[in-house]
Length: 400
Image (tube, rainbow, N blue to C red):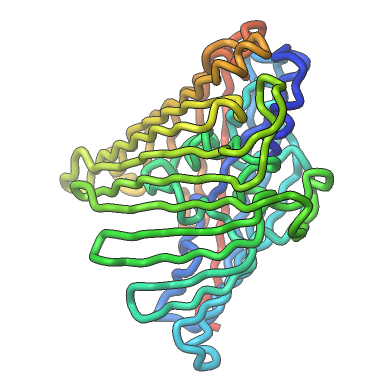
């Protein structure tokens, strides 16, 4: 993730200073298996490659007009150690990542990041490398390089959308000296997952407080100490009328500089509530809605409140049962101390409309339309209108 520390270093919210800063963890839509889900009907190994290419252009407003090509290559390898060597309940996961580093937010001037595959730096890196151990049917432990958004603060319905705040809320994504442990930089972590009853989960994780090295953003770096502290995260998942409800809390143990330049302090934390609910299901047609509310410490973060919501429609096009389309909005509200120090506006609001259609079993295309009101909460940047076209190609090798 691009560092939220860069936000705190801005001298003023001017058009010249605006740059993409907040990105979100992601499991690309084209993946046929989420991490940890090797098909029991096939062999103990999985190798999956997904390439995502995206053309996005700023048609009006923002900082300047223009278009950029962004890309993302995921290489995922997983091994079921039980079937492979008899290590019961164990699974190994290794995930490599490449991005070309181009930026559409540099044109639009927004902070929340229009594209969830934008990194701002060209790099081929090791993204995840963990081992999971299941203990019975209700408990699992996971340790290693870990993307917390692969399990925490994640909803299926929101996964359709290409803009970052629908992957993980902006209130959480902006936090820390180099973001939390999410796309594109992850840190060492240990995660506990407990399933006390069907549909219920309790998750807790402790992570290195600074993923990677902010001074070398294109490298996978593991370094403990250096005053990094830890990030502590807990989440409760509960069933909700055919959907689910998430309630989470996060906290850093290290001290952070305050927005008002009154020194450093502890207590950089936040809380979120997030849910998805099916509104209609009939004859293969579905309508799913999602909503998220989040709060972060205003003393240390640019945004202290975030709300996101959207609706996704599936199976509504005759003869195109797998097609999906939807509209979503993400609103991030600036903290009072940040507004006073920077002369910022009250919020940045991003609206997205998108349509995804699979052309074959391995290829899908997805046009999208975005409007960003007050990019970077800067009164001097006009609203940006961005058009995008994404293509995803995904290939899996199972049973070897």
